[in-house]
Image 1: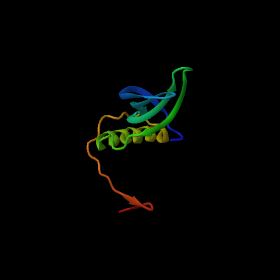
Image 2: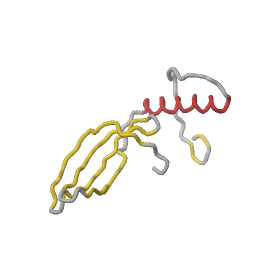
Image 3: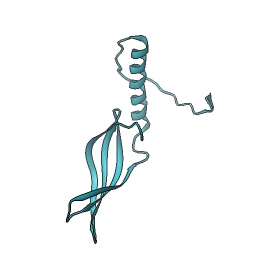
Image 4: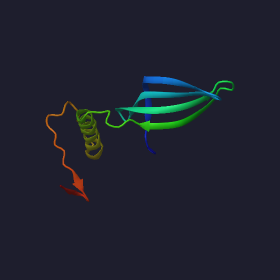
Length: 109
């Protein structure tokens, strides 16, 4: 997640668990990462007497997107890259057909 550019979208779910020295909040939130919406789960501890906050966990929720969302994201990326490389001005409209081919060691399986 080193080069991630996450942008907060909305809270999907949250819960608070009182603890002896504060409260732990479990939050499921939606973010945008390079135009692809993703769900993350965060755990934040708050010491309410001082307002101190600590991010305990921040993890991507697996299998949130269907394959169509990913294909559209990659198609938009392909058009953008082509435009930069060829000094072109194409605009993405839609995906007509896609095919997924697994690769191992740079070779299509």
